[in-house]
Length: 175
Image (cartoon, rainbow, N blue to C red; front, side, top):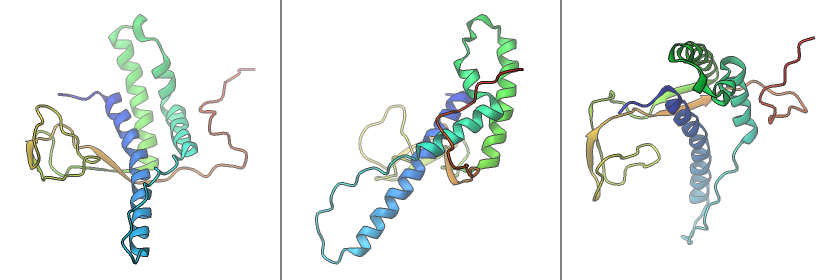
């Protein structure tokens, strides 16, 4: 099974922002565990508040360099495959530039796609998703379809006071 470029981009963005929330959540749980001297039933931990402004800032950069939103919002039914392919090449180059400049990525799985992989019982279900005929408890043996992506760092430009992250691309007016 092959995942499209935009499917991978969507998955990468999803993992990017969930990974940050997971790191904050794990860090807060580790501090709470060390601080507690007496075992007490832990209170449910509320998910960390999403950093909407940073997510929107990244989306704005993807629009600025790769015209991602323009491409996604465009009705492609009236275009032939060659026109769509030409547009996709430009979008791909711009999106790649933004990701390479602002996000440090690494694969989740360290084996090549198409290779055998074994996941122990209790594997991290946020890092690995089982597909196909899944039943019973681990360990699970299968073939890696997609290596996954994790972000180890994100470096977004500093914003100015009054920055409105909800404006992903300003309207352009020729004068």
